[in-house]
Image (cartoon, rainbow, N blue to C red; front, side, top):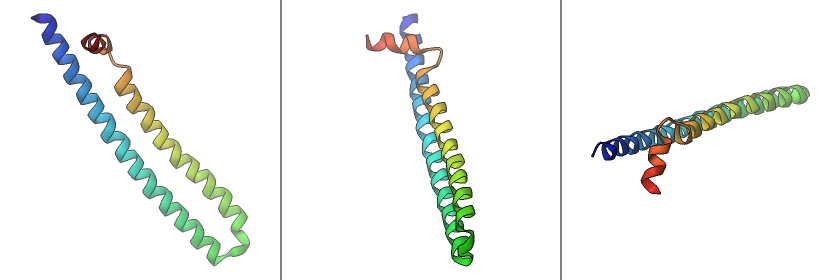
Length: 97
């Protein structure tokens, strides 16, 4: 009976981790999408106002977009760690074996 209680707790913990990972990556993707849209809009406005500076603005915009995208990738890494690398992974694997 004690082993079953541990397995149930492990499964509940896994469900909580999967839910947290899902919400975390959703919020990160939403935030990164909004930030990239704002950055792109500002770059296009800057190029429209001063077409001669398009090279500098484009390079700066691409670097900024890459940094914003890296934040979403970091959130994905954290979400994958929450799902696959936690202390009760063995107990959860035992449930499905």
